[in-house]
Length: 163
Image 1: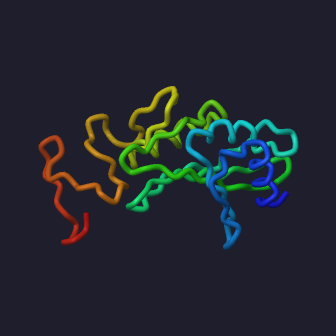
Image 2: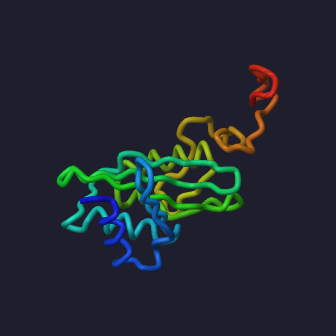
């Protein structure tokens, strides 16, 4: 099944959830309203003609003016793939967790929280996964400022202009 066909099924089932589609380029994608992402993902996993049983990857992205979460899904049974995107505000990057749909989302969401500060509502254990609990800030955000010290250790810049 082509991505465009999957997008049409999403639009027919959740007409208010689909914000836009991108059918150009190598990877076609659909942008979903943040508050609908868990419902749409559950539908994509459980619908018999789709069965997107694998969350291959969940990534946070910082575009300076907005944040984004990208979901790469795969149906092992039908061997089709789809990419979903959710746009979020920089000030309050928050959306429902899909860890109840795919257990693999648990650590992916924790990483997006740890690196970008994206909050996944109803996540069973949303805490840092890579950095220490007392780390300040989210280092993959474009507005992140590297601290001068951490636990008494001086953090030196690698080169001027690089943070």
